[in-house]
Image (tube, rainbow, N blue to C red):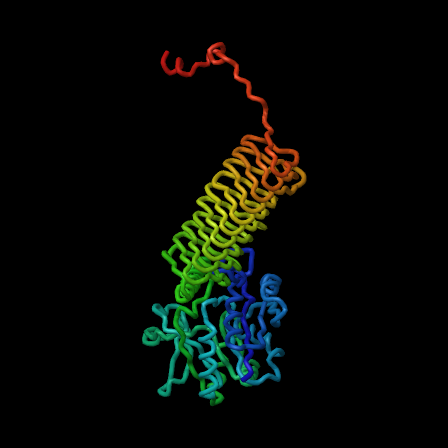
Length: 461
């Protein structure tokens, strides 16, 4: 069966109070509209047309060239929106799914079940429904004795008895494409808002003698996003689903309430995620790692057996069995080799570290290529920026950089070389050499007394 889809994404979304189109706001790593597209792709909706309007350039940029777009210049209701896609649907057969672009929680499996019911029972249309805990504000579904949809009654028009019905219209539909086109040409705007309602097509098809079905989905899946509160609710639900999938796949998540993992993250088995972690983008984490607590990763590649404790790391790679933290910062473009140990307040930026390097505390290494088995002492740093340009330095394997040393880039420290503590290195250091670059110490005897600066006397006058 050929499956088409029409997605309504032209609304301004005023309640979001945003300068951006509502459907491009992100939830769990993807724009809302991308979640809808993913569900449609999973339901084999090969031909998709998106009705765009407000900030259409943002929606087009998110979805790219793999789908079709139709501009709705005036927003005159859901029926009018679907009418804009009529030329796209002409000549097609099979089914057409109609959805809103702000419903990120619907799943591909649910859409497939709707299509299966449509095809098996030969309906002219299916109204997707849900049983709402509080149906206030929703259109109620009235069924006949055979279970077919008899009418959709808006809340404001419902009788007290009808308002007791908890099965509501979810705003999603599946139509026979040819019959949909026939009905779209006959809807009017007989309402005070002068809008064309898509629900009128259901009544038109029923009056034509066609069978209208209903397919009920979990209420959670049909929730839309109209404001920032509902956006947060969607984020939480999507995050819960993502965490559950990782746990089923063999990842230990100690505290799901404080763990946020975006769609697209991959995590190997027997890895543990400790509390207060966020893992975003295309991050890949290997097996047997321990991530957290309080660790934040974006677009990272983390190998097997890595331990990250209070770490922020972005767009970089960390080799197997590295132990980083607490309070380390790995900035973009860095590669940390296997078995490295980076400790308190170490910052690495656009640099490479070979295997078995030790930077235990308070270091800054920027724009530097470091070999393997290098020890860099406390408070050592590279001065890689002169106020105009950034320069790159190199430290060879087996080198030792003493505490409180500064390498002024560009400079090279060769393999097996030593830099004495407190040195400022401005020239290359040859292999096996010891570099000492500090002023000669001078002690002036009794200087404290002659200046009257004895602190002990100040405390004990």
